[in-house]
Length: 246
Image 1 (spheres, rainbow, N blue to C red):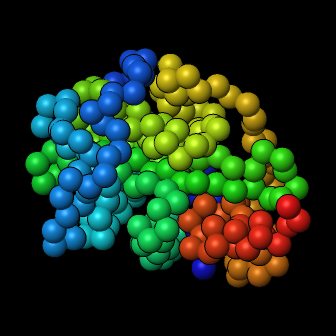
Image 2: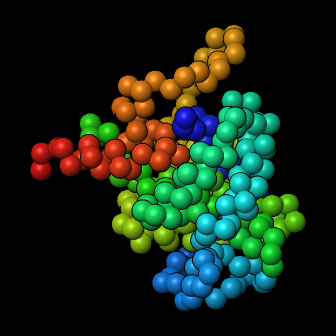
């Protein structure tokens, strides 16, 4: 029913220019829509870095998000087979994109070279359990640059826009997951100011682990942030928060 967070771990593989991220380019900051007609996506300031245009994904762009998302995870599955996408992942992703457009709790950014989608960034506001004092942060879910435009600085540009978006929302931090063996991604994020603060340790028990049926109790407990593409994640988190004493 839901695409589990473990599928997204390591999703932020990076391709492209691994040079250090420069200060945020104001030309790439999210701005109020300059024009909207026939469902066209909002523009993000004037185009820069040549002919590559960045804009938020509109409803008619879901096909482009799916194509880049599956390319990213096809690569991630070569690093760790457990990152393979589940059957029906397209429906879950489409539901996530629709929710993001409705509640604006995240950003899905596409890079276009003419009519060709060549880059993807996905970020989502995250709320941890009320057990924790520092509960609110932004997660970088996916960052991908297609082969024809690697080495152009597009990865840096996408990351700068995403960090600027998180800063504008008042987030205290941005976090992401990187596969331990993904050295290019690790170097890229280190140069962008990120640093490792946790590790995930795994013990394989020697047999396949099918997805199985959803556990309703587990889903409810983790809905406040541990299933990143759950369409009910933020609604449940807000309900939990409202139930807490001031």
